Image 1 (cartoon, helix red, strand yellow):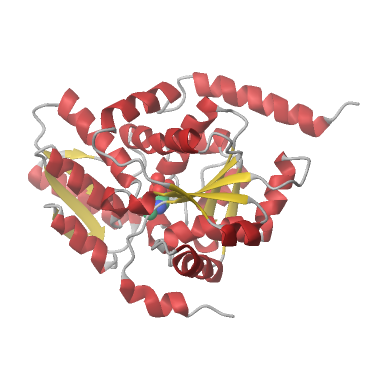
Image 2: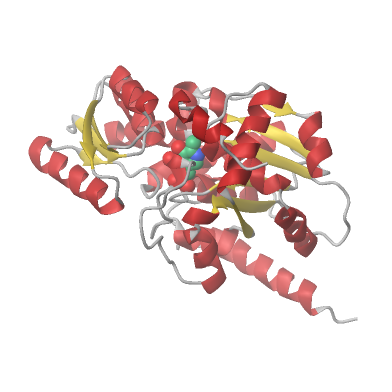
Length: 354
Ligand SMILES: Cc1ncc(COP(=O)(O)O)c(C=O)c1O
């Protein structure tokens, strides 16, 4: 019997594999494996944990990739380290790196720069969590505060470069950053080879596009699902319309690390390699974050709670039913992308309805 759904899927899968091998993306599987060799001495292999509570609540076998335990408290060290080591190798005269960041990339770049004896400037929105501002300074970087908007961050970074020189390292669009983030995907497949689905939060898209490139290179049948706050749903809209559509205004969400929109370098990979996008409400993010604190005893930041909330949502099973004809429990890896929480948000976190 002719089954259009499966036929379409096969055609899409072949197109993806072809695209994976093409040079239309700024990051390939081989780039990610090279990045892994480069950064291995500098980043931790974080534990993969399980939770019977999350298994029961979701109806699936949940594996938690605990990048909240990564040095600097998030996966961002992978990409920043890869970018800094490449700069040291290719541009030995450069003495300074610059970025704009809500905090995690800033901390990661600051630490990577410090390890490589480079100066570092981090432009941060003035409403960034205090713990993140302090940590960036703690790794020896100079912090420049700016208004909380994407334009102000870019302008701030341009001004710093004009004043001090240096190379700009984008948190999610720099190809070497994306390659470094992809090492997370390689590690997931090594630690959980039976993995069928991966769920991770999306902001600028560096993490999820790197993961998808790596994972699909290991096993093209693994589904990679992006999770994002309803209030910052540019990835969802872009995938739905097929056109890159940034958030119209800087979003207001408790998941502070994913306020940035998907960018030009990550969009082609997100468009072709990400299987679905699930959006979650602020209450769902808060509930999921608290649940992981209380039941898994893991301190995660709300942005990591976005992926947990997605897996616990009704839309997750709807999404899986598109890909898997049977409704058996699936082996699902959820990326706990960071643990840098400003405890000043506790009242807001506890203030969720029901
Ligand atoms: C903890 C955390 N999770 C997720 C993201 C989103 O990553 P990306 O911008 O690469 O999509 C970020 C980005 O800052 C982050 O810090």
